Length: 250
Image 1 (cartoon, rainbow, N blue to C red):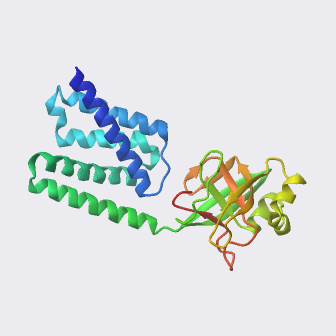
Image 2: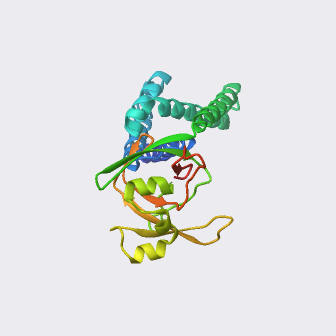
Image 3: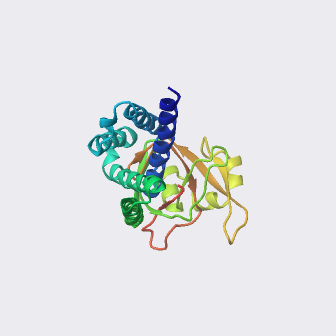
C-alpha cells in the first residue's frame, strides 16, 4: 500500500511540474485548480499501473497525457498538450537513462529537449499581443508589446501589471498627461475612485510612481480576467503603434 501511495504522490509532483513547465515555456499563466486536478489524475493513473501493468503501455500513456492536457489547459490544450508530450518524452528519457544508460534514453532526451526549445522560441517570436480594456462604459482595443524586460508587479499581491501609454489612459479614464506626470497630486484630488500609486524603478529613474487602476473587465491575448493597469505619462512608442506593454512576467 505504501508503494502505491508513494507512486501516486511522486507522479503527482512530476505531472504538476510538467504542466507548470509547459506554461512557462510558452509564457502562459497556469490555472492552479486545473493543474492540481490534471496532476492528480496522472498520479492516480501511475498508481493503478503498478497493479495493472498492461495499462502502462505507450498507447494508454498517450491517452492519459491527452486527458491530462484537456484537464490542465481546457480549450488551449492543442499546442500546450503537444509541448507537454515533448517534455514528458524528455523526462522519460532521463529516467530511463538512470536505469539502463541505453541509446533510446539519450535519443528521447535530446529530441525532447530540442523540440521543447524550438517550440518555446517559435512561440516567443510572437511579440504583439492584442489587449482589450473596459471601464465605466468605455471599451478600448490596444496593441501591446510582449516585453520580457517588463517585470513590474503589484507590491501588494505580487501579480503582474499591464502598462498602458498616456493616449490609451486618456481614452480609457480621461486622465491627462499632466495628471499622470503628477501621480501623488492626482491621487489627493481623487479624480477617479480606486486610483492607487504603483512604485517602479528603471535604470534612469531609481525611484518613481505611476498611477494605477484595477480594471475588472480586461482581456490580454486570450486571457480574460481582471488586471491591475499602470498608466505611463508618455507614449510607449513614437508612432503610437504600441499602446501597452506586457511581457514574460506580465
